[in-house]
Image (cartoon, rainbow, N blue to C red; front, side, top):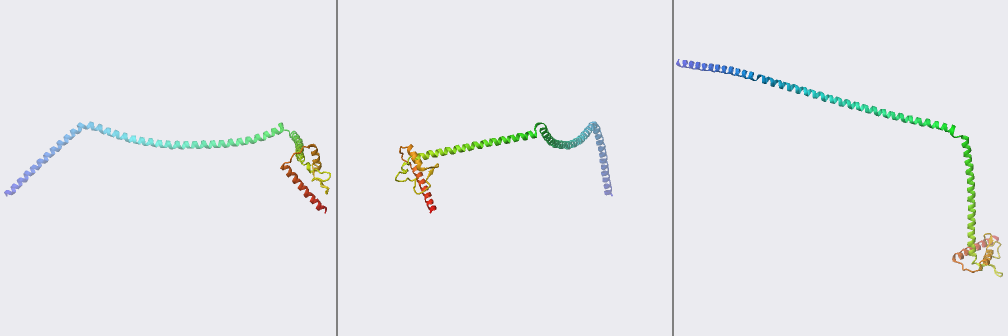
Length: 254
């Protein structure tokens, strides 16, 4: 029984202690609450201003971000539009310039054709007479024929003079050769080499018999000069040709 009473008392004490602690805790909570309220009231204006600053800065940042986004979009639109507009302007300008060049080239070509026909018409009508030009061309043709005839005559005379000069040179050389061949002239007893007694055709030079050339040259140039090798070879060849000709004539006569 005593134990039960002691237990009850102990429980009563514990309950009283617990209630007392709870009461003290409530008082502490209330005290803390009032202190917090007082502290909040003390910093209320400052915190309100800080909250206002935070809201202000955040809203300003959002507006700034939105403004920069809009500004970037505007710049993009402007860039694209300016590029498109500039490209179209350049394209239309280049097209216009090309068309203008083509038109000017066409107009210039047509102007050239018109000028060509008009100048031809004006020249034929006022500057050049067809019949006068025909007469002039005929006169030029006759003049050319006269000049050509004179040139042909001059050429013929020059050829004749050249032939005469060559013949004179040949005569002089032949006379020089014949001057040293007086020993081949015929005598009263023995006929010479160029005076064969058995043929009718005798050797000739410049339509004159060689025998006669030798006689006339010997009379003029009586001084004896020894012949050189070229002269001897020339007359030797000439003598051989004459002998061949004589043999052919004999064979023909037989």
